[in-house]
Amino acid sequence: MAEIPSHVPATSHPSPAAVIQLLKPITWFPPMWAFACGAIASGAELGDRWFAIALGVLLAGPLLCGTSQAVNDWFDRHVDAINEPHRVIPSGRMPGQWGLAIAIAMSVLSMAVAALLGPLVFAAALLGLALAWGYSAPPFRFKQNGWIGNGVVSLSYETLPWITATAAALGQAPSFRTMLVALLYGAGAHGILTLNDFKSIKGDRQMGVDTLPVLHGAANAARIACLVMAIPQAGVILLLAQSGLQTGAILVGSVLALQLVCMIRFLRDPEGRAVWYSAVGVGLYVTGMMAAAVALGALPPSTPPLG
Figure (cartoon, rainbow, N blue to C red):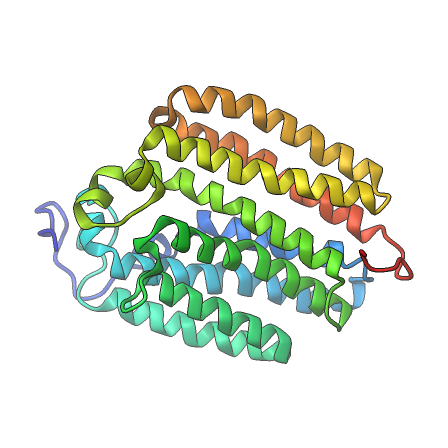
């Protein structure tokens, strides 16, 4: 573990600001957005369920996602000492075992809140929590392989919140159509997560973390990320069109077309433009998610399931 920089005062406990930085609020958006998409895609009247939906958004973002960030930073503290020594644990602002203690406490709190939302949400939260710990912690440490690790996170951040929210709003399992859309957007999120790996190629290579940029090189990893993001969205477009949701298909198609334009620029300099594309391309991606959710929510309950 890196030595604590001399300018960081010695402390026996973290400050509130350090705790917030450990939980990384900026990362809460994807699962919260996916949960909101799932609720809207249900087509259910949400007025009487607003408290449960709000609690579900809280669970998906600050609690479960915040927990996953704390777990990841604790078990990645040695890698972060190389890639990002300014983070709260390697910098010394989160001293001793506090990072681990916060990860455990957040896990317990997450399950307590999930229990309030019923057995279905509790089971989904338990699965998400298990994946969060398995992603970062030994003996599994799924993140050691970019294909497996990014798949675990995309399932946890996109597919699970979407399906859980739809089920919670309906009081029953979602339709096959809705689950398929959630799975497709979760699959596409695998590419989004690869974008985040470009900033830490050096440290990941030194520590034996086989992200896609490490395994395949920056240029090939960028091509893979773009394909993985684009193909599932094309599947969503076809699914919406087959369901008679032409407006939704056109909207998702439009944001995909804009992404393709941005992808061309990104592929010319993957390492230099990964952060740029992560901001622009991901913004378009989640806009398409909401367009698909609104389209699905407009389907009448009597609409027969796909196939």
